[in-house]
Length: 149
Picture 1: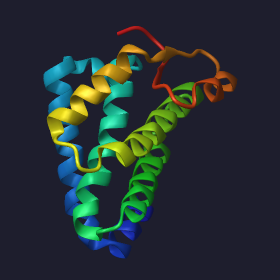
Picture 2: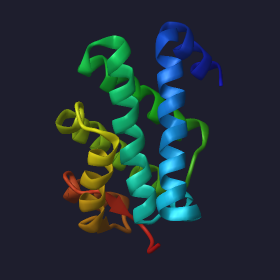
Picture 3: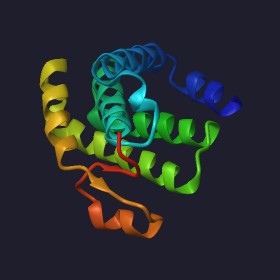
Picture 4: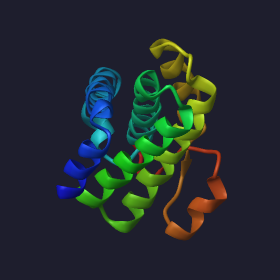
């Protein structure tokens, strides 16, 4: 928790955009997937990638720098994984999908929310089921999940 407070003190102007992006991500995923996005299937992969795109997009409006936005999103979402730890397979899946969200942001930084959702819905159709930590590297360009929704 102290790390989260420390991050907030380092970049206080990023806190509100991050909070708004987080809230919006949950609202979108609740609307599209109900509670399924809290499990470990495709809906969860969608949520993690959307969360990172939206954090990057909102923080970019404050920072004016895409690289800084991506770095901030990585710090926040990596910290989230440390503060709310999962089993190793689940954690690697979340970190993988977070990273892809930041990668997608490069293409989507000027996209509307609807365009982002459509883009990620297409990506989620091709998501790969992975059941071993050692296999995630095989899917560096694909969203991944570990159980069926």
